[in-house]
Length: 283
Image (cartoon, rainbow, N blue to C red; front, side, top):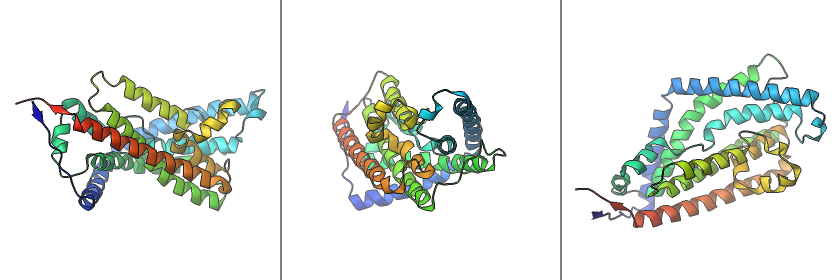
């Protein structure tokens, strides 16, 4: 039984190393074209199923007037949901999970890097690499659909589009910070993946990845707007479609950045506490 001594890297060295790691791993992830094309085909197929269901609802449902999104906004929600799908944290990074399960966290502690930001950079690069391929192709298919009833509409306004692009950056940071929070919780957990998978699934559902949040019951809308996971998909998409006016963008960014900082602080505290108590067994 060996007690691990954690190296204390300087902040500047950690930033340089994590930036280099992010760049290298992003380039590696871009090489998986077959996986990206498979993801695109599944995403487009799922988008067409969703659009068919919503078309039937908006055409024949008795209470369709109660829907808070227009059909054009639903089109944007469905297609952009598939474009941004790769950024929503549905799982822990596979390489990091393997290190946690196998006990190789001890090896990671020998590196002269801040463990949290080292893993943050790896998680971010892994998600961003897959996002470029899947997102770009899905976006092109959405705009190229032959029928207007299935086509991704243009942004509601130029200002809304610019704010949408900015919110995608904060969406990315929010998603990675939540993924790292779950990764931190997973360290030293010996009863399997069930609890962390449930936390990730709850986050995905509350992001609007399965059903647009404006279509949930009206009495829940206040909670759904301020909860952290809306910033992972719902709020940016609503900026694009005009469901949230540009004047409301400040609240969107405040929520995204606020929850991001909270997740980062919580993740760092958890990972620091767990690493300080970690025990590596072996010869």
